[in-house]
Length: 402
Image 1 (cartoon, rainbow, N blue to C red):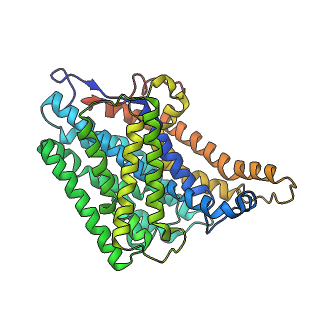
Image 2 (tube, rainbow, N blue to C red; image 1 turned 180 degrees about the vertical axis):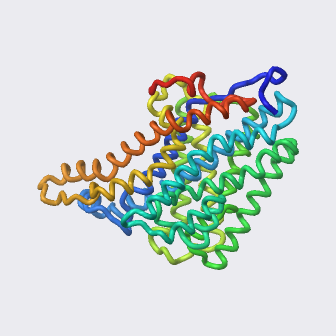
Image 3 (cartoon, rainbow, N blue to C red; image 1 turned 90 degrees about the vertical axis):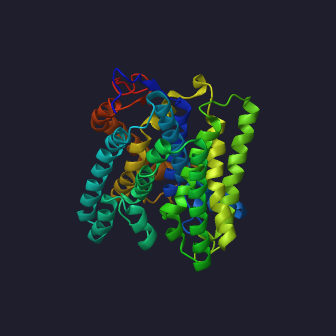
């Protein structure tokens, strides 16, 4: 159903969640750019020496930026759908899918088109077009899980297929289930994810077989929905020290989770076993929930405008960042030999600028232009189908950049 005269349009927009979106993207970006134990940095080894292995291990938690994306997405989708049901009396399934299509498909398929072009450029791999074909029908997660992650810049978009598969269930669950049944729905998702992880532990599955499995990632969606149900639309009000405790707890959860999965960066071919695998993957969405609660209700005056803006365009940041990295690599900017510079600190600064600063800046530029000139027309159409507006006032029509 359209939001029209018979259905008042409400609004649910939390700028602090935009900041969280940006943080989630930043973690993903760091996961794809920062040094690892298998690809170490001479600067890290020089400055940290014996502490370098611990540093590399700690950086491995950046992979959970995706867990934060999934959990936050489920929380927001559930919150918006429940509010829609309360206002309109039901959930407009057709309108939900129209909104999701207008938000995701244009940029998603544009990126896949770019991926095909990159496959035909010098240095590209044309055989990866088959994998991109799987992505085109939202089966990218299953392709990544079964055959490994492709080398094309569209590789991170396997997660979009997980989101799309979740959308097949979410609106129907909120439409047909009361709160008690929604709790049961979340429990079912957790049981399915746990059973899948138990099976993978028994069969010593590869890390990409596990990480790319949609059912495994559904645990994050369950966590987001549970948070929505527990809060009942309320915004936590708490002192700063309590939020700090939640942030510390988030860090501990993700560090413990990564320690349980240490085989991914220490013994890449060794499975940690069934129960450590299940426990470690459960800690990832738990940490994401703690971080969301820590940010919910934060004073908007304390939130940097640039961070909320970058969170607003975070979908574009996520989509384009591998393209920016590929362009930087093709230009040879990430492989310049700076070893002749005698000062290690200056070497580290320049290397960081070439390997992190340039691709990050290029990503922001691409995402900002995309949001303003390509995505905005579709967002305007999406807004006409909304019962609950989830954009800040003037975000789509205001052409200024904060």
